[in-house]
Length: 337
Ligand code: KG4
Ligand code: ZN
Image (cartoon, rainbow, N blue to C red):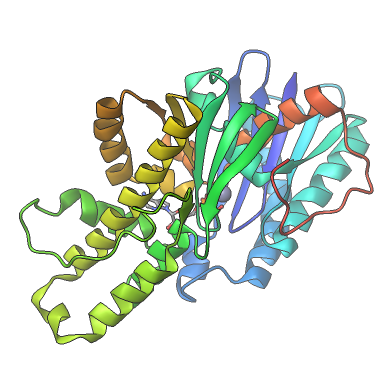
């Protein structure tokens, strides 16, 4: 079955075509708006929506063209688009385009939860994932732990009490005068900072508590007050930013390992934009081996938002529950399941 997947939940217009039988991605394209939003220090929803409107049809044409597929009825079997969570203006553009294609080509349409997309994304690179497993989803808007029962059944077992970890990195980046998004820059610093170079010590919120929860806003506040103190002058920007990521990664991995122990599972899947972090990937593979855990990440391009993960999650949703009706609305704060 050929599935066309669309994601317009944030600032990337992503379109992909997946052959769900073989699992191969026939085309995937992302039109990033990052430079447009960078000057504002974050994504401006109206600008994002207007750009999605401009890009969506050219991106669909580009995907069909690069997959060698004519834009005719009878070739694509299913169209899937992100229904939420995300920015409503952008979601409506991708969702409407998908409904129009479905109607024109007389094929079924499904609305997909963006987080479900991240949750299955590692399969695009590693083939079928074993179930049940523990899944950690970390992005600009999410820091959540799930027990994954199947590609369409997840139980939320832990989440952040406040900010998401990507939000933490982007906010700390602003404090350190970095462009948006700052996660990738802080990540480079964290990987390259010499081990013995002096750095401040920030807290690891909730790490020693028994709860399966995160709290990242306190870490941002600790960094803010530290930067206002005289102490800060003794440290480089690189060491301060790196310490924030070191602290966040200690919390993310600590709680994920605790979840694996609690549920007796030794397979951990880490996905979402922040899972692209090289520092996180290296640390997870070192510590995971020590804990006897199998830890899997999607390739970097499938960590950040992409249409392939929406096509794959759409395939699973369609197989499990059938097509969605045309009166289905988008939901900016949609929950998983
Ligand atoms: O999943 P995603 O592309 O969009 C959302 O659904 O939010 O995640 C974006 C987030 C941003 O906060 C960005 O700073 C962070 O992922 N990010 C990274 C890296 N690449 C993207 N954080 C750390 N290291 C990276 N290499
Ligand atoms: Zn995302």
